[in-house]
Image (cartoon, rainbow, N blue to C red; front, top):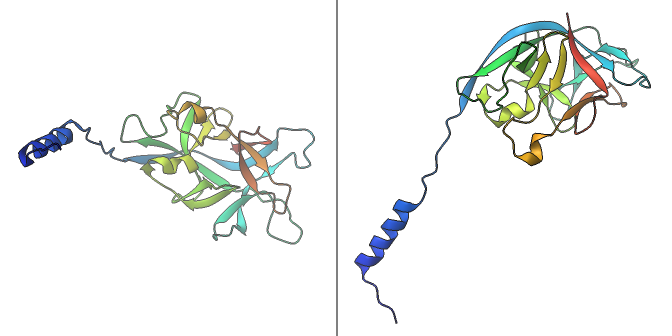
Length: 205
């Protein structure tokens, strides 16, 4: 039978505690977002076989199961008429921490940030599992940006949904989100993981 003194046992525990790594809590940064581009949100088919080659997208009263407005291309009426032009702001977002969570740097051609309906800067176009909705903008520089971060080409007005941080592990780093329009009622605009673009979203001035 082995016998250990209480003093030796306490000393051993203290040594283990001292050698254990201390977890570092990362302070969450805050985003500053400013409007750099305003235009009508439009779509144009990437395929000549599409029945709806071009048109407008917007929020017109269609809602999801949570009561959030859904981004659509057809009105919520019996005739399902095309959505009238709606204006949106692109807000370039920068973090007070370097690097920010998403980790992408603006260039002369592209900027990164949020997409909001004009006069509703507290609301952002937000990805859910099957569609884009209008939900409260998050200014926390954390994983919430995976649902609201877009890229804007300032020369063409083309929009791309980012959906993955630059520093993601290799299994996620090459994830792409193609933009498609549902063939079902109201023509919902939907992000499709690792699928090609069916349509091109643009902010047309």
